[in-house]
Image (cartoon, rainbow, N blue to C red; front, side):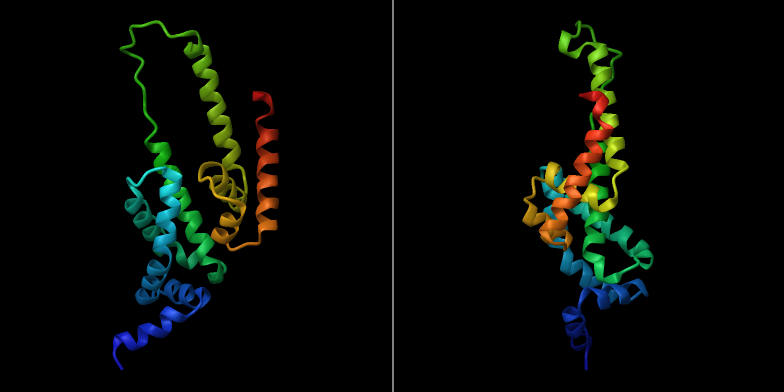
Length: 188
């Protein structure tokens, strides 16, 4: 009985068993998770970034983090949604890190009225307020909101991605939107 004979049953095992073994340090089990979820994580990351650049790096970083933090996962059966949250955070972090940093030291032209310093400051404050509101959402609500609003996913796609019913997606999005509306009220 060779290594391939042992691998086949592991490939067929459900997430709870595979993730449980990987959390215990089983490299072969973790390899199953990598093979099982890399395509989905790549597609999701590509949609969040709106391009193919950095996708493989982000997915790899997500798996490195997952390997390190897998023992902290409370329910190994929910490894799929947990991995999607990890890769989502990595992708959002990459977006934040790649925001252009504009140096105002060498600006010689007067700013147009719509880009006046008070307007720019107000816009930045709005973005910061939205970022803060998103960070205060529960993980599932934030993931749902990001998939819908940034990823352009349909309700059915979100439900499939997160492994929850469409009705749960509707509820999560409604709570997330309500929270954001309340937190952003002063910016209306």
